[in-house]
Image (cartoon, rainbow, N blue to C red):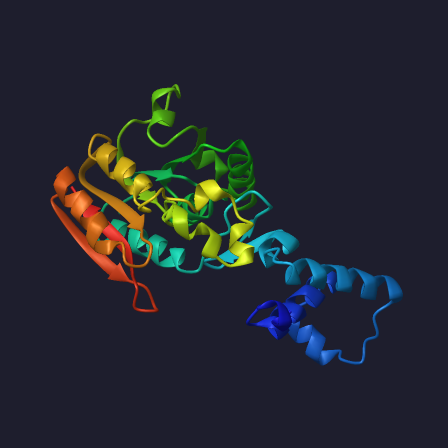
Length: 278
């Protein structure tokens, strides 16, 4: 796998072997004398071939961890990223700082645009047990996976999964709330001309979840333009950003009329999250 450009080849080789044997990585070190059967060896070689060919490990395993929770994923659905955990953490922090989520009858309404596997919406519902959410995605397959993840973690009853394009999904759904305390999104932000330069495994993920148009800002323009019409005051629009996009997206939000904004860096020092306040 190292020969095929996979940086942590040994780690991923161990993860694949643990997946095959249905054991933990530490088990491999504690049972190094174990000899694989002929069938197991053949299956392991096939898993290794698929990974070396650029198939994401999450697609092979069918699972990806996000904020301590396991999420189903499959080919055709965007894979949760560790940096998106910071987005969720900031949204959770805002609810606590504002005092929106205190008392027995307190509640909060959240809209996620482009839910993918549902990792953001499901995690927010999991950690905010009286929150109600609407999770929107244009792709039926992604919504099916998101709903499955909601059921897996016992929060599906509090999430309304809607198929449609961003805010237009709200217009055609009966009985769905039209105003929210929070809008959260990890939009597609890769410039169209840069897609061919992405690693092979990233190019296996759905183009719609990656491509942000010629400038990488198409989704931000649309999300920001419609946000104030559906946000309460005080309200929050929380967006994940691509590297180098903070100034431009912040400018879009200011011109749209948001009262204040704040940019947060990720653990690598990249300006990764934009919070916009009503």
